[in-house]
Length: 343
Ligand SMILES: [Zn+2]
Image 1 (cartoon, rainbow, N blue to C red):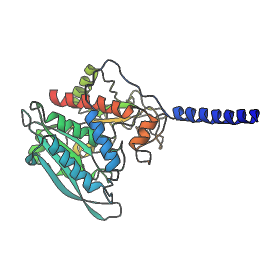
Image 2: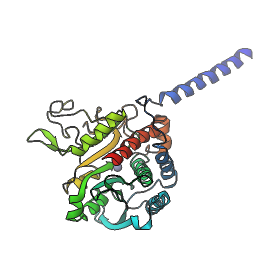
Image 3: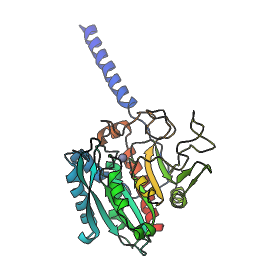
Image 4: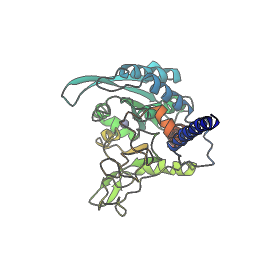
């Protein structure tokens, strides 16, 4: 009897140990910088993200049940944050899905007048079904917009745009960029794209367009300014490692020589109008993605690809990478708010 009880207790102990072990085995570390005082940067974005993740999870641009509500909620947060009705516009456009069917969508725009008419466009897509892609960029853009409206007028006029239908060929940003007048294009110094900023292993800044003939990346003025601010603040912001001199393993020429990136997000709509961009994301360009390319398509070395999977929820990301979400929001929030106040 005693033996049997011991055995049962033994089994219970082993089961408990297995539970503890698997619990910790699936929690991974995040590389952090030390000595940076983040204040409350990133905290409002985290709260916005919690709301998006729990209340507005299905923002699919074709048939998402929370998409319209997300659009209205964004406009309401901008208003609550200090923007007047005159400063907020909801712009309609329509897009064709992959079956050729037309759907309505909207971009939500807030304009913060600066000391000059020179513009910076800061954008993030709010459609999709992920917390990381792109609840996180939406939340960060909201924090940035509501933070900057409270202080002195920034040097540039800042146009904050929450894009619809990015997951359908970047149609929202295309509608916005194609609708810009020649004067608006000429007045715009650069665009900042925020897409999937929490899950990945490292915080990246991308920018510029590859000139494969000259073997260089051009249009880097904005990138260099923002990157220098990240360096000065000690934020550990990276540019991805693959250059013409150092292509990824198995490649003779990099597809996206650093610090440039691919055409898979909203910055591309502005590149097509000749507007330079910077693009922030959390990812991992040092590991191959599902298609064997070293292009950040698989954002984590320890847990694989998260975006565009069912695992892109705040609960799952917090379980896999405790604290990473807030940390990456802190890093990017401090970077972007500082850049928009200084540049
Ligand atoms: Zn995205």
